[in-house]
Length: 626
Image (cartoon, rainbow, N blue to C red):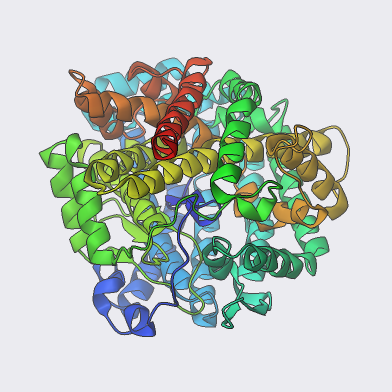
């Protein structure tokens, strides 16, 4: 049971190259309600939220009244499942409200308490409903599927019920399922510790830049200032930021080790051979997808090395270091105010049709986005599309740069996906997998690039957008694939009885970092202190989450290319995949739409696209030289 659906944008942690901008005027984030989401659309006020929470708490025990009767008849089965899904939908609403209120200011103790209270309620719900899967399995597949076939009221539950029987070999008895549900009270602790420590408790350092200004290097500051044009400033930013993490590295190492042990506990209890198998089984993704991704990424590392060498040439740097990844290879003295960004995103996605344009326009013009950074606000960006009968919401930390425009397109790609799924699917099958979700977001980014190249007024501007496209592909494909390889390695250590100290984590991460950045090939030197970067990445707490960024961008590039070429049926096929929500396994949805992510082809196509972009950049540079 997932209380709510939120997609965390990796661009917060591996952004596109961009130009560092001045500090945002405080008025943008603090006094203009147009730049913050309106949570009164969810609950009118705090009293309404508390009333809804109390009402749900009173209803949850009633779930137990259905225990022992699920197999009695189609009518009793429908009544039970209608009740459970109705409560689940209300819980998603409560969870979304509480988590979003907390994300407005992670330092607010009342918001933290509110969120914790809903977490406890979610645990109560999971425990109360834990008998359902074992009882349906005991009733027998033939009987239950017969009820579904005979009763139209059970039709919306056809796929979720089929999933219960697919997972039968890994479902425990009622008592054990109840214990596992109760364990959720503590299994989320590692991520909670990481989140609070890194967002609210670490005392972030300040540094003086070469222009004499003093800046704070917290997570938002790191994202912003690591792209500064002065190389010494960038190095100072890296040393300050990772130096702050180093002070808490032992704690963060214990936290991540605890998360990996938690993943293995869940997998082994359910009789999966590995944590990876358990994670992929949730949505029936073939393990060949994960293995093929890692194999193909390693096979195509020469493409990444070519990009780094091109970056070094254009920046005039012969001895590339890790802090040279983020500055733009071409500078662009151009601001992108938020209102401009909205128009660019709307215009860029017009190839998806009038209906999509209407969805994204109304979303951007409504009060569904929390736009600017503010003290205590959660860093990064995400979309929450869990409130089925309200509207998706997006959190960003907008900086008036092109990176922020791309992030806006990315997150509202998720948002429109939710709108399409919620409109075309009943609640039980509206919730979709990350596996498809990141296709919707990165396809929007590809469309944005195509639009920006069309409206660019100079070769410099085109070089800037092409450079951003390369950095996007590096950050979303190669970087996330490296994360996926790291995640697999640390889980395998624990599964084979090993331990993970912070030093061991840094060693494993450092070996991968040096391989992916081409240290042995003379491409980039990796300093020891940046091998602690694992402590900064929140996605390692999400149980084999990040690989889907890499698979998705490989797929989205193919979808976007077909849409931009105007291939017959391309847009309709793509939108049909989004409208399908969670009505089928995500790998099958994508494969039926024309992309098989268990084969090398999509990954080879992505490498070919990167080489094509580098060819375009080379052509512009050659023209200048002549």
